[in-house]
Length: 567
Image 1 (cartoon, helix red, strand yellow):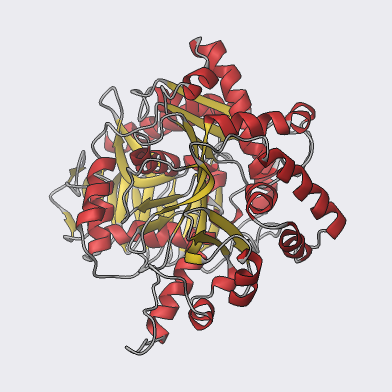
Image 2 (cartoon, helix red, strand yellow):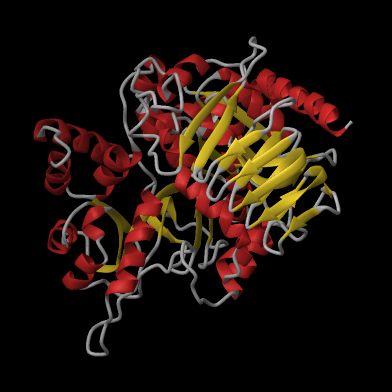
């Protein structure tokens, strides 16, 4: 993912560069994917707020791939994690263009659909509530194939945000189930809710972070975008290059406090592009997530009403909203030319957004600003298979980052809700929550959640929601949603095995991969000696799957198998 790429690059920089006292301090994020030493107080405050159970958005909007997923999330969240929210609204992106709406028009379209649904389901006028600053709202984008997570999303029948983590979530009725990636994101982002009445905050559904900067600052701009500001002063040309900023979307904060966005440019180009706007005070990579005031959201919906009605065109926030709103016309056209967009088209779009900006009331708030998450923020990304493995196994580590992750996941008892035979040997670092292991085995350096078996032998593996007479998993293996009442499950080191359950078939498909396989690159091929089908063909078969009905079927199959095995 973008954030992981940025983080990895900065880690490399930390390892490779020493800055002398004669040079300006080089500020860069110290990212959670390595063991780091940092002041714990801001992070402790953040994780405490996230786990308090009271910091959630009043209105939660989920943008899904289809209506079945929308129904699933409205039911799961409204009766679970978000039961205290005023409204849970989930809607699909039924766009006419096969390429989708883009995250710009997609956000506007999901918001309009959510407003209609709020009236139908709850009898509430969401637009009016936001305009009066009576509620805070968050919109989570979850659509997408999840190729880099393959084969895990296939096991959830393309419900990518429903991929389970090996941690138990206690539901409103007291029952437990593995928490999903989306639920973790909703829990984390809720800390911004109190300061954002009258705004809609937009997040992506596979990254969890703890901000080391304040999360309670009152908004000062109609649009603000999250970023990691790298220091108190603008970087020099050398520092810009050393930090690799020319490779990413960058938010530049000016002396005025307003901000602008540039993308994949050198230090000299950035300075030249922004010189008419003012001096650069701070810069940092954009995280993509943003929030908008109710008034500018209404204005954007009005401006693009034709596209929203016809459900045509594809516009993203960065190149089509934020950049033309914050950059001069010539510089904007130059950046878009790098994307292969004709200058005439870019100039026409810039003219449109420039005219749009002149209609806005900027008397009390600026147009575009930055929200700093802090250069010591913690990041846990689950958007790739290798990161899913890395950050779930992080639960076993001793570092401060791992301690924060366990605290965020409320993992105080590593054997919570489990019944393990005295013959089971489990080391101090391993986690086995919601597990029933009746006869014996050995669990070493592993994370297990909702596992039922007579015996388990595992070292360095992740096992989630699996049931079998015996389970054996080697180092780096991932076993997921496997229901095998009669046959042992055996996974070699680095093996990935998931079950794909359909609504009609009695037998589940076991889809396999390995930790050294990139699901995106292998998406269209049959992996030799592992599968008879490609990841893409399973994705196509799963389209419009009734994920709610399949989840219920999977739970029943699990219970039946568990009862047989433990009897």
